[in-house]
Length: 169
Image (cartoon, helix red, strand yellow):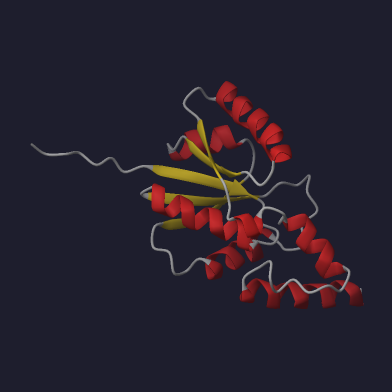
């Protein structure tokens, strides 16, 4: 008797501006559960990004280079449409707190309404990352605080350079 192992790809979408240790924790957890994890960085024009799309792609790539089953890409538009395009229908989302659940639950239901094949898998980060968000990290950096505990070393270095450049202008 043979056992068929199905290759399952999951998509972890987000802006990753900047990628935090919490994001990386979710990526590592997802990489253990799925054959392939596609980190899909959104080019959301409604958000004010500190890093360009290409920079965010590079920051994530350098932060997870030790993981073998991760693919990094970008997309714009509706996530449900992107999932259909790549023929993958599992969405990974991280939940830090109860407040995240309400928003993520609504998003999961909307994605399913837009495409009945979409399923959302919620993963919990390590407790030490439950307070982390890219927005908070950006604010700390812009106000001159230390972000070294919140992002990978390479990201911290690039974030410091970016803040210096932003404050010069």
